[in-house]
Length: 507
Image (cartoon, rainbow, N blue to C red; front, side, top):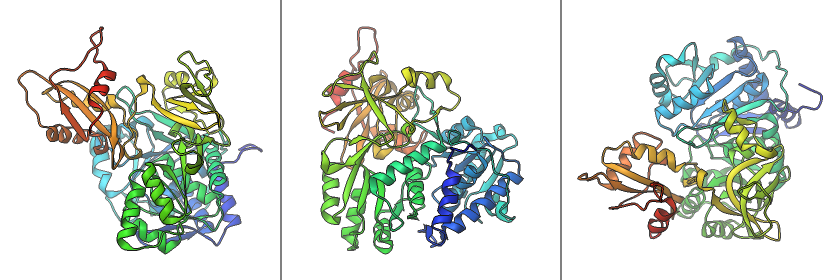
């Protein structure tokens, strides 16, 4: 570690000194509490145990499980050792989870009991000498994570730089395979400072950690609160009624959400009669009617954002009321330029691809040098998203570039090509186009328009079930429409834009 470096472990040490006896973490499920000083001690014990079994700088730690204190401790221990965390989305199918694990090739994997059979059986002989542990103490068929924490908190610190990799988060599948975005210690620290600046966080704040810790939003908000000396109230899995109760019981002041989380909390609050007046700030993506309903009921403020995993979650941000419909202005550590198809800058009022540079930009895609080089061409991260700046400097999101079309149901990323690939495995389907449509609950829903093979019949719910059995359930289409013919271009390819124009309305 150099003189000018500041890593995630440094953040933990700083908080342990500055907020030693304050409560850092509360488990909503069982009420366990841990102060900042206790958190550092536990991190050090876990780091010592991992080092004892041979984990070194740069090695990967796989995690498949729901939010928990142990999950967050593993992030801390990895930071202490210079190891890289590979958090896996537990909502994926078994094969998808194994693909992400194999792509990151972790030396050790921590898993909840519910996912242990899936990852070991699907992985088979490819596991090699990998070590497995129960993520939740006392639950599962592996050795317990606590077995690694029964020795003194003494480990040999790694020579870790701020620019070293810290976490690999897999993004949605492009051309049929997910890509692991490698984020550094500096990425997380800069994101933490950005979010602290946006919310003016203090040790008096309480963050309800309801997004999963495998998601960049959940991970970075948890560490931003930790950095400020604020308290994290952790939910293993989101439940609207429980969230409404926790907001009142703990005086929760902020949270990060994606539709329909906020609307379901507001419904639960009204049904239960709980008080959510402490909730001063909510950040995320949601419909205007939900945002305005929240602000009226709570008196708090909603903050809009634009960002990706590759931009450390946040590239633009701002209060919704400042310019309803826009995605805010560039974040403090971010420079944004909009470019045309030849990477030439466009003027305000013109639509262009959103490109980003600054310390929030990720290090690149894991083991995908060509993809990284293409994304980072001309010294800018090319997001594949389209936007427009108005004359006040607000960014207006204008969708995805055609080659990077993306659907975001409930904040998750789904590429149409991945869903189309699975649909075409069904023997009754000859052609299909998948795209996003407005959805009252999820903000954006997945629709599949299909042409069946001659003489074949298929019900929409059969196809939905077929897809849901092969990839993560959130990727299955919510809407299916069968048509006699699909429009084609001169080269014979299906004309996606015409399909969307013909069948994208009236859902």
